[in-house]
Length: 421
Image (cartoon, rainbow, N blue to C red; front, top):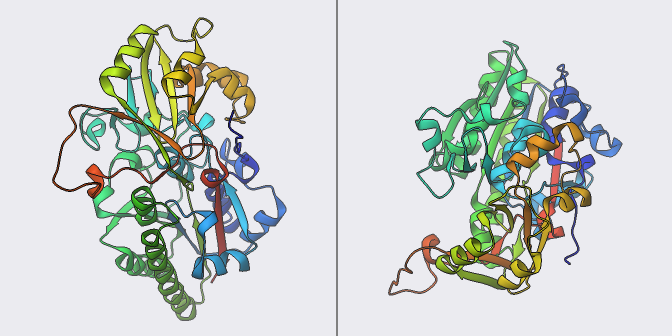
């Protein structure tokens, strides 16, 4: 069995926003969010300054093991804080939990793909749609309010003050989908590229201060995640994107410092990631027909992958005693661990799961958990393979060189930077 890096909720990434609101902005944060304010002294002290505006940069897949340049310098100068991602360590739940301010077992957003009994189907949280069906935001387009599928609403929507503003900056090509889980009380603005985002942050912060608002400005960057999937985080392509992000950080610091000189207002800058990455050297490719035949013979209703993590749902939900776990491990070439959901809970995959919330969690979670070994991924190839005159190019045809969702150190541990300008 693989050696797992279990989530450390004392350093959980979902604690950042509750701590900003409570400690840096001095706002009353009620239950259940208040218990997720950082308790660890060396982290909590970073938030002690009263600030007017807090900027939170979410850099998807900012790998701790490959940190360098301005980001590494700032990380070391601000204490070298390491945060923990969640299980599974995927964008579709980890990013949303930063905004929501709660762990998966209290928010209900337990994975990127999971079963939702309220609609009687499996959903893809990242795209806001039924898994395997439809296009981005298709659930919202037919009237499904994704925030109503949460067990507790986002912490941002619990702050009802006219002098507090929350702004979300997203790349123009990814609006919708995941943001529907936490969009209430959040002004959404789209940007065209990295440097455009810098100037949007500058203008938003300046305008907030001018109009007497306090609050948080979020900005999300996807470039490193895209480069890692395509080339891996040890590639020159990934490092080229990291150089670009470092340039953006340098420019943003100069712009925020100028606003501080102009206005005298304190601005906090937080830089964080949602997860890291694992290099893929062994890609288990299974044809869809082969998988469907195996699933039918062994009473499997669905396999819902969230990156390098997967829930397996049995036809008879909860009846795992007669299921031959070794058969599933053999099917994937013994390069995976198959664990019952109850064993995964006992091992600490979801450390905040309480007895009173167990039933609703089990309704959404699978009966089994599939975890590929280190440097291994599973790919179920659906439909006829498209032949093109070029090999391994483009997002549609390229094999993944790195992925995430599992519980290795490289996926679970992420850097955190906090400084006051």
